[in-house]
Amino acid sequence: MTNLVIDIGNTLTKVAVFKLDELLMVEQFEHVDAGWLDELSNKYEADRAIISSVKKRVEPWQAGLEKKLSLVYFNYLMTSGIHNHYLTPDTLGTDRLAAVIGASYMYPGKNSLVIAGGTCITYDYVDSNRNYFGGSISPGLNLRYKAVNNYTAGLPLINTDADFTAEYGNNTETAIRSGVQNGIKYELTGFIESYKANNPQLNIVLSGGDSIFFDTLLKNSIFAPYIKIEPYLVLKGLNAAIQKHND
Picture 1 (spheres, rainbow, N blue to C red):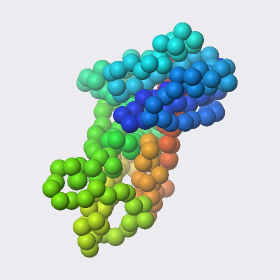
Picture 2: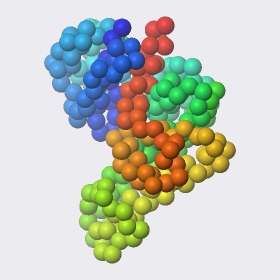
Picture 3: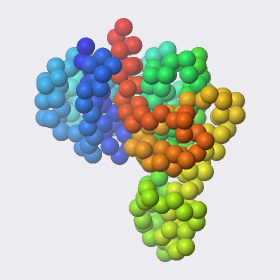
């Protein structure tokens, strides 16, 4: 069974193809071309598709996909065995739920903290019995840089520097970089320390576009041995969800 998995995020849309659990390909776009999507489904002989979206609007290519494949729209009811204790499950971001499903599916029997770095940074914990109670949301890396520039009169917009390791800045540019990047590092370690206090063998799963950068921030920390990098965790969670949905 071949699955077409589509994750519509705040900034980019990710498209992946799975043969059961095997990830065959993945690409991301600002705008998806309907013709390309049609060719992709033909090339891999896709049987079914799942779409997850953080947006409310309908994309122009969705109608064509509905006519061609067995298509489901991921929602909070498709928990794939996760016991979702979120008080307002219908408001839980589908990307967060998919990531939790992915972590539980890939690391069964583990207490996992999923840290996803994208437009926002999310922290979500699922225990070894697949219980999920909630998590945390904070501004993402690029969002913080943009906010410093947008909401001040004189501070410049600068980019991430993965090689920056200083504890403080000695000019305006490096002071911003220290505040943003070190601020995220201290936030990451603070959340991890809090969860590890009750779960010494905590499984830490980094996902999303900034997962590699987060791993760099944490590489010299005491948490490094517990870290797994899964840039495509949401896609893998969606693939698990559609397989469970069709069982």
